[in-house]
Image 1: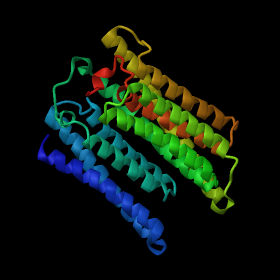
Image 2 (image 1 turned 60 degrees about the vertical axis):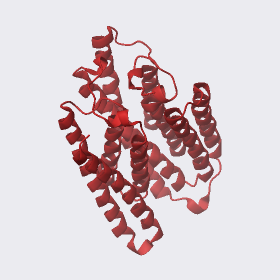
Image 3 (image 1 turned 45 degrees about the vertical axis):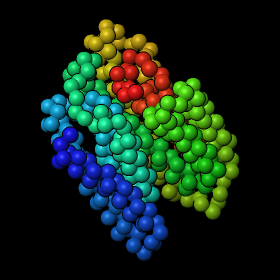
Image 4 (image 1 turned 135 degrees about the horizontal axis):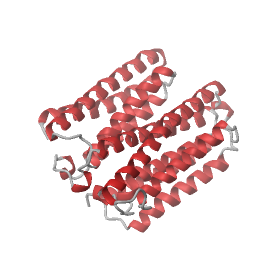
Amino acid sequence: MSDFQVALTNTAGISSVVSFWVFVSSNAIGKKRELLVKLAQWVMIIGFVALTGAIVARGVEASRFPLSNLYESLLWFAWAIMGSYLLVSRAYDLKQLGWLASLTAATFFLYGSWLPPGQHEIKPLVPALMSYWRQIHVPPLIVSYAMFFISGLTAFLQLWSAGRLKAICFAAVALACGLSAIGLGTFTDTNTFFLQALFIGGSLAGLLAAWFGLKSVSTKHENAQRAELYDEVVYRSIMIGFPLLTIGIITGGLWANHAWGTYWSWDPKESMALATWLGYAAYIHLRIHHECSAEKLSLVSIGGMLLTVLTYLGFNSLGFGGLHSYGNFK
């Protein structure tokens, strides 16, 4: 990996951290809030441009499309998170979403930097990835994952604006359990049964508790106008991510038939992708037919974000294995 590429990647990572703290500062300094929000967004733009350059530089250096291992996919995911926030923030007044988006980007930068050095190096492609389908199939999935994260993060803000503080706490515990399981599975030799129980059990228990916690309302924090705005952003983000996920699943089936002679083999990653698709299809159905309150839909979106994490990282980190296990670095 060239020094130029490292410099651009580090610039993007540092920008995400700086952007996070500037967004946080904007909440503490009321008089300068608008100025600080704009400054934070410009810092994120700098990081987005730097990361774009880093990805292009890696592709030139590797003489191939730069999306072949977990580290490279994390660069793309951070790029998509930053780009998705910048895109959505142009259409909506989303001051609070900025610190969540920049924190997410910074977290995935940190996650990628802790991967083994072999993941950072540019290596020849394994036979399974030597196909033009790679650049057709993977990018739509990565961008869909980013949009689903944006929707899930915005769902937390919707619950906050609706005064559902108890539900937020339980939903945050569910997300923490899921991310902790991924982290332990990536960097330790923790028993896979425990990791799967932590992710699935913690996620389900947290979301179920959050569902019942919706009955508790803090009128002090209620802001119906902001809650309605955030609900709309959750929906719009999913409506961008869902077609991209659909395209990713279809092209994945075409690639699978080309590589393995079958369109669908119920591989763990395929099954998780289908579960994620069904989860967001359920959200869209409930939203269009007004069969759930906005707060319940927010929890569905957060559950979808957990399914997205499981689809994206869980099949390797939690020991599910399968035909896609060439992405595993342990």
